[in-house]
Amino acid sequence: FLWTALYVGLGYLFAERLTIIAASMARVGGLIAAGIGIPIMCYVGWRIWIMIHMLRHLRLRRMTPLLLDQLIASGEPIAIIDLLDFEGEHEERAGIPGAVRMAPSRLSGRSRVVVPEHLEVVLYCSSSWEFISARVALALQKKGISNVWVLDGGLTAWKREGLPVTRNLANPKDAAERFGIRVIENPARL
Image 1 (cartoon, rainbow, N blue to C red):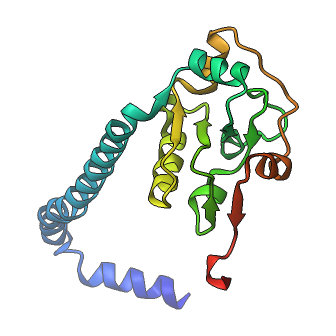
Image 2 (cartoon, helix red, strand yellow):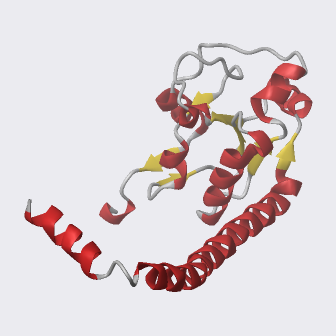
Image 3 (cartoon, helix red, strand yellow):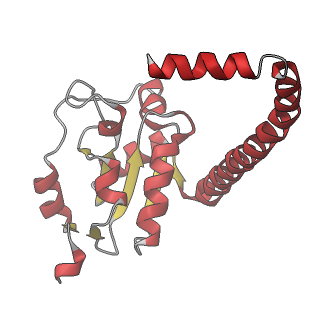
């Protein structure tokens, strides 16, 4: 009752001035909208610029599905990392034979990843323009892993080429042992 009475009382006292208050609020509202909208637009533009820069940086580090298939067939040591876990579907989605499904946050987070120098690492996802793969590839490059490739077109391009897919992906622990990869969850303990 007191809250309602307070607002009704304020409305009664300032009834003649409501049009003046509304007009001044309309003038100030444009300034407030510009003050909030311009920084948001600048932030969005900055993030788009960073994403474009990231994709240009990775343009030379792309691998076609056919080349990856040839490397797999030749027996070259190549670690294929499936980043589809991020996209919400875990075991239901098929992937490239021999690939390991991992969450991108595990690779790009605080953990330290140690990869032998001779090992090529290929990342793929199903997002358009391979944004997830590109982000993880940049994070791995910042950690000192130079042989990181992004599968051009991701899983969609792999399937479009008619290459085989499987639901039985490799176990992360077995693949890490086979290739000599170590993921150190808390590097501060070393």
